[in-house]
Length: 135
Image (cartoon, rainbow, N blue to C red):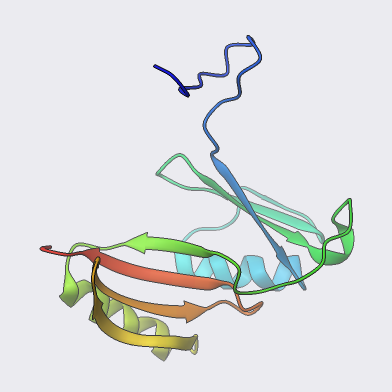
């Protein structure tokens, strides 16, 4: 298949499966995500933490001051998306996250793709919860 990559050493790379967020404080962000995800990081140091997820994707948290080469910019340039079963689960997750003190950037709403809301992590990264239309 054209464009398919299997990482077999023939010059192609495997599908991306590791997302790293640059954060102010890796330990504080690791605590935040441990509470949100309901699990401790698989690896943690003062500058880095990582959470392997059931989906096969790994979430990494890297202290901005330790990233090489240095990074510029921050916050809302991308989103981590969390699918849920239906609009009721969107509302329930919104209530849970609001009760946990997460800043809500978008209240639950219906959009073209389905029900959704957006919260922010301590560094301003967007966390979108959504249920596909028709769910």
